[in-house]
Length: 331
Image 1 (cartoon, rainbow, N blue to C red):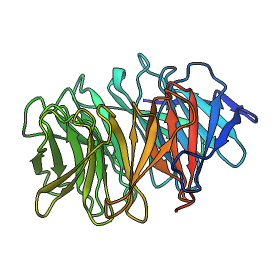
Image 2 (image 1 turned 90 degrees about the vertical axis):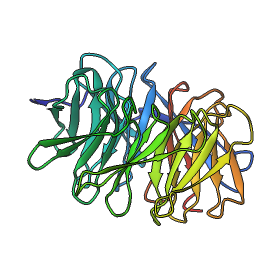
Image 3 (image 1 turned 180 degrees about the vertical axis):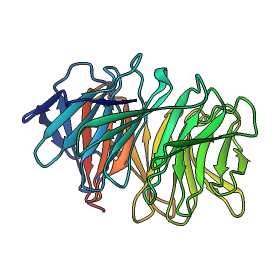
């Protein structure tokens, strides 16, 4: 089904730079926070495309938004769905944005060049759509089906779906990513495992996390193929080395910090959010140095880290109703 949705608003002065301050341990980095003019938008999932545009979801209003930082203009578009709840976003090599309409069991594509919105019905009913990733080389869309215990694939050229079951029942696959060779990796919080899907053979391999009930919640692959993920319940950030199947776990300094939203920069430093500490943390590539960046807005509920082409780190503040950037410029 295809629907053409005109952008709900293009607002020339939609954002005002609310704060610009030096974090407590920022080593010269600064935050800039943008206060959203739409009350209660609840920005959640966020990603930055190759041109530097910032895409994010207004999850409480069920809208997709795009910010052009240079002009501070935002555009908002409604996501046709039975209810709010979209909480995953990705951008393809063509600049189109993808998200999930979980209540409708559909994958949603927003064509940035024409504002055309297309919805694709997932074959398995009530799949419990969760994580989303787009292959930046082929444009193939990968997604997780938490309720159905499957990993799905949408070929954007043919609109054909493939679905693969995970070996462990009730594994509840969630966050999903691709490694440099094209393998698909995902969290399985129900099984306390990390999963890998070979896209060629469709074989799924599972790796048991050492910490029981760790609550894996976000996942990313670094340039060397190591898999990094957060253990939100386990209060750790962890690394899996696929060839050796070895896990290394790094515990947060403060109990119940609830680490989330892990990512890796071009220099192989690891970045993640400590939700209850309201801060972003950087681990040096050798994991010997830890730097904390305290977010200016208190209790902001930060989420969804994404680097822009200049090396600055964007994120959403769900409770603060803001979109923000840590200006580090690739340091």
